[in-house]
Image 1 (cartoon, one colour):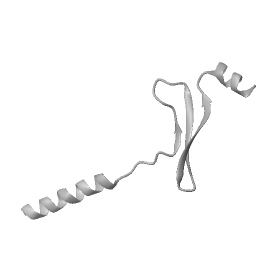
Image 2: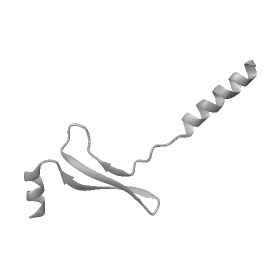
Image 3: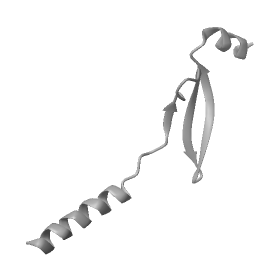
Image 4: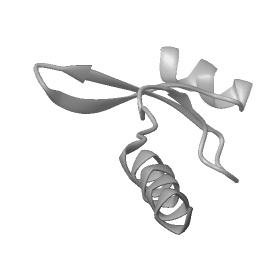
Length: 63
């Protein structure tokens, strides 16, 4: 019984250790007004500034 519990615990820890969260998507850093898009291309990750929560800044960038 003890070995079964240890094996279950090790399996649970290994699942947590190998789980990954994708960094791809749209992000807004905490406390910042910028909005970034993170994407993968040719095996590398890139970030692109796609907008701002401040409408005045968006208008300046379009001109």
